[in-house]
Length: 293
Length: 320
Image (tube, each protein chain N blue to C red):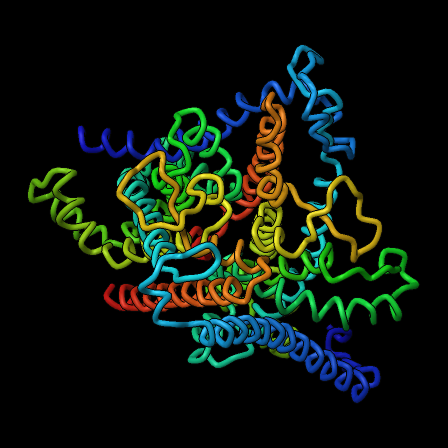
C-alpha cells in the first residue's frame, strides 16, 4: 500500500506542458490550414466561374440556338433539361420501388444483395456506363445518338442515388404509424402509399433532386450517347442527336474563337448555378424533414 | 403479397442493370480479349495499324495489319494520378474533418461543411474548365518551374517542367474532387460518435486536441479507411476533368511528375472517334476492354470500401 501512496513525480513539468501546448497549437493549426485550403479552392473555382460566366451572359443565350461555335444556348439548355428529366423518369419507378423494398421488407438475402450492388453501381465510373449504353443501345439496338440513349445512361447513373435516399427516407417513418395502419387492416400497398410515402416525401424529393443535379452536370456518359446538335429537340426519342450544356463547356473552350469561349463560360455558369441551387434546396428539405420527425 | 413481390421484382432491376452492364461489355470485348491477350496489360503500343490496307487474320480475328493494343501507359497514368490525389486528399480531408467536427462552434458547422461539400457538387467538366484556363497557366508558368528548380534533386521532380498539362495537375484537380468525400464522411462519423470515450480522455487531463487525435480519430479508423478507398474509386474513374488537364499522352510512360498522361477513363473519350475509323471494329472492341478493366477495378475497390463501411453507420452514404 505504501508504494501506491508514493508521490507521483513529473520530470520537467514546465517543459512537458510547453511541448503539449505546442503540439496542440500545431495540430489545430494544421487542421485549420487544411480547411482553409479547401475553402479557398472552393472560392477560387466559384469566383472564376461566376466572373467569367457573368461577363459572357447575354439575353440571346436564352433565345437563340447554337450556330457553329456562336449564337445562343437555347438548344443546349433544352437538351440538358430533357435528358436529365428523361433520366429521372426512367430511374424513378425502379429506384423508388427498391427504396420501398429495402426499407419495408428488409429480411431476406435479396435485400442485402441489392443494397450492396446499388452501392457498387454508384462507384462504376460514368464513362463506363456511357460506353455500355453506346455499344448496347446506340450500336446494337440501333438507336443511334439520341435522347433515349442519353437518358438511359443518366438513369443508370442516377438509379442507385434514388434507391438509397428513398430507402433512408422511408426507414425514418415511425414504425408505430405503420403498425397502426396494419392493425386497422390496411394492405401492404395501402400502408406504403398512404403512410410511408407521404411522410418520406421530402427525403425522396432530396434523392430525386440529387439525381437531377448529377444528370445536369454529367458529360462523359453523354458524349457518345446523346452526341451534340445545333438544333432544338424535335421530340424524336431515337436516331436524333441532342445538345446539352456540359458539351458546350468541354468542346467549345478548346476552340480558337472568342465567341466559343464566351458560350463555354456561360454554360459553365448556368450548370454550376443550377447544381448549387438544387444543392441548397435539397439541404433545406433535409433540414425540414429531420425537424418534422 | 402481390405488392411485395412487385416491389422485389422492381428492386432487382438495380442488380440486373449491373450484371447486364458487366456482361454486355465482356461479351462485346471478347474478340479483343482473345486478340490482345496479356499483351494488352503489359505493352505500350496502342496503334490502330495501317488503316488503308486490307484487314488480315491474326489470332483468329480480323484486324488491320500492324494493329496493337497495349495500355500499360494508361494503367500507369491512372494509378499514378490517383495515388497523388489520395496521398494529398487523405491528410487534407482528415484535417478539415477534425476542424469541422471539433474546431468550430456547432452553430457554424453546417454552413462551413456545406461550403466544403460544394466541392463535391461542382460538375467534373467545370473542374476541367477551371483547370484548363486558370490552373494550367498558373502551374505551368510559375509553380512547376520553381518546383523543378528547388525540388529537382528528388528523382521524380526533375525537369523538364512541361507546359502545365500532366500528371501533377491531374492529381491536384482530382484531390479537390475527392477530398469532400473523405471530409464529409469522417466529419459525420466524428460528430455522431458517442462522447463518453472523449469525456474520459478529457477527465484524465488530455487536452481537446489530444483527445481528438488519440481517442476520437482512432475510433473512426474504419470510416477513414472506407471513405479513402471510396475516394480512390472516384479518382480512378474520373473522366472529364482529367481529360481536359492531363495532356492526353499516347504510348508514353510518365518519367517525371510533370509529364503528360492519359487515364483509362479519359482515353475512352479521347479515342472513340479515331477508333471508329477502324473498319474491323477491333479498336472499338479494345476500348470496350479498357472500359471493362476499369469497371472491374472500380467494382473491386468499391466492394472493399463497402465491406469496411458496412459495419459503420449506413447513413454516411449521403455524400454526392
